[in-house]
Image 1 (cartoon, protein in one colour):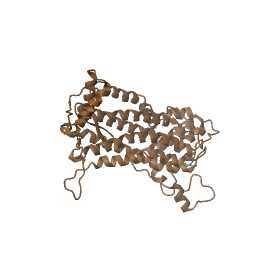
Image 2 (image 1 turned 180 degrees about the horizontal axis):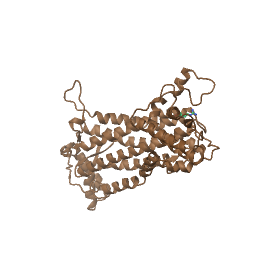
Image 3 (image 1 turned 90 degrees about the horizontal axis):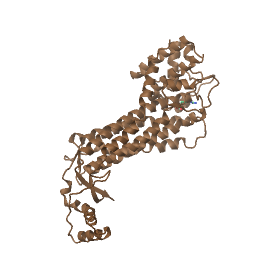
Image 4 (image 1 turned 135 degrees about the vertical axis):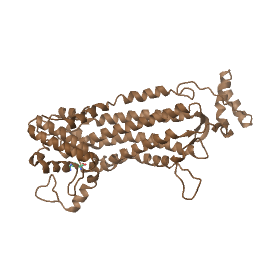
Length: 449
Ligand code: ARG
């Protein structure tokens, strides 16, 4: 069994090892690429302050680059007996380069190493979530425009209420994503600060150049206070989880609407056959399982901030091993959300709507307010008009006039699609993903002479 980074003159028992390593050997694979990037920046900085020779830096960077290739080919493993990704990378360097490999950990702790790994990884994941949200947003806006002339019933209390339209319905979910995007941006900005150099949470007596690692890794700035940098563990994940949860909330609601409106009793929308699933017993069934699974997965994702909160809630200042467990719920959440976003975009694009719903007289009464307003517009006081139409309805004398005319901003006749697109674009412009991408690319390609 390979020994631990910290092992000195006693060995822990297999049971203790099993329990404390937990699922890190699988979960840390998510972080492997980021771990290597973090090490590249760290050792480049160590050389600049005289803690590594130039030739040592060269050799270490070359080896880290080849480890990165192993990771990108999907061949990287954390071996039995090795605790985590940080130990595995150091072990690989030491096997190849001997003592040089043992020098890289000066001025660093696995505490700030995992912090920086999580920040780099989360930063990239947030970018991918943002891209998927934008794709779904565009599909929703397209459908909103495509069906802006088609009316549908609007409900309150799930009772037929007032005229709505498919333009409004699709467009509402697009606009919801604009607000979700603001959360994603706050999460991204909070994530995009460098914790490296905080070491175990109290800094180091080496004259670390944290500005340099901040620039090398393309962070906007650093988490300055080393105690706060460590305090960001868990807090960052929780706040990012809030952003994921608000997106998931939008998706879960959209999925519920879609399931309901697709049911024969509503029959407002239709999913193409190839997007439905069948029943093993009922030959006629075409079920909206994709939306049902999206709803459940997204409802589950909305528990993520609470799960993280509960794991870290009562921890005082400083690192605790408790924080390791957050990875179990946090890391897999991104793939799940991105998958739901992709599927929602796929189906929304293919969804068609029933253009003749309102031929059914069960929806006639939703035009009552239109009639009241018509009377009020020609001088009848609103309350009297309301009463008159109400009495007509009770007496069975109400006939709807379905020619409606809504003109104000955000209404059936004036969806403000362009304005909503501009809101989204404004937020998107504030991410500046290219800075992080560029820095990472340069760091990997860097040839240090
Ligand atoms: N696996 C650990 C985690 O995720 C890495 C940090 C270990 N640090 C320590 N002091 N034991 O938190």
